[in-house]
Length: 223
Length: 254
Image (tube, rainbow over all chains, first blue to last red; front, side, top):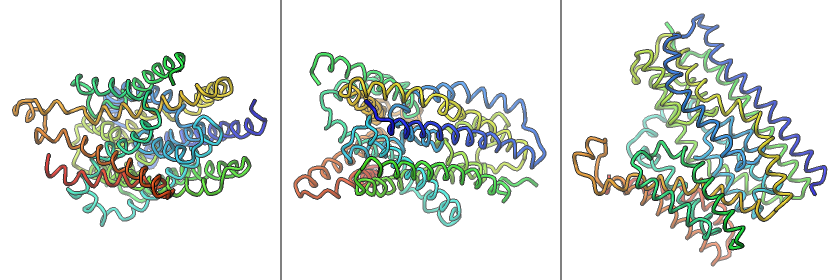
């Protein structure tokens, strides 16, 4: 049984997480409204409609899928922070996974929840600070960061990140990793429509498939 | 004349970003306090903070590159806000592009019409809003389910977590190989689809291999020499090695 203290901490995470979440949601919506008031203009309604039709169906669907895919992995505190600061699959989640893994705690334990929250909070703070410094120094930094050499390196951020992360998690669970890796390799290689921009959609597919495989192996007592 | 780099915009964006920073600090302090209550080793907390900060540097700089790219047409404050709060470069580029083409504007030119700027800001905001709306509503429900599961079947709960992580990782591994069929395509097909060379599809594969090998070596080395700190920095180190290897690989295969 969980003791009451555990419940109190998690409950408070949800309580404050909701408050912060709604406040920031309000601020984000206030930004374009403030622009309209300050510059005393309205949007170009027909362009707004066309733009939204192009963006909203796809990204709202992705948003809903992401919520259900990432909230269980991020933990409570991690979820409230990550869905505000973004860059979940390419930064926040790998950062938290690596941190939990190194402490040796289980991600599903309260210790795992706390380490995940600390890791994601620190990552959000550092990201925000680096961007602030970058915005201040944008004039001298632009030519360096946009140089051919560095853009080539940044273009390969995801393969480099997941190459390192994959080794750790595959080594930990060899039996469980074989089937999903084969499935994803076959899908991405054989289906031409699956390219770099579709990886976000394939994450939930991979997650559900791996859970199914895990359940079967677990029921058969092989894992 | 309207200027998307006006100081008023910097002030508004600054206030929102300060609030977001406030949220992170709030949760950080509370988590550290709770960690002390349940006797999590101080050293583990310290290492988590340091290694998370170091790991974040390279991805954060890549986000900064995104802001610089978008600032050409949108000025600095709007991309700064959008990429600090939820957005990702791929989304913001698509959203801003959709709005700009609806307005009949070209991507490379600084927006100088306030109405167009407001329209772009609305499209970028509304497209990404779903996560911000649903997180406060759904997080507790999803998490409570997991907490119950943890209480009922500890072993399956831990396995479920590993399965989710592996599922995500396998999707990204698949993506690394998504263009390898280029090796067998005709020259005409490659040119028509915008690829610079037949072998460029192998660059992400090689980069991934370098990062994986670096990570594995760090693990072995720390075990053999019994030095723990190597594993603390293994992920950022393998990330940087992988990204750096992209430079020679691109010269060779690109």
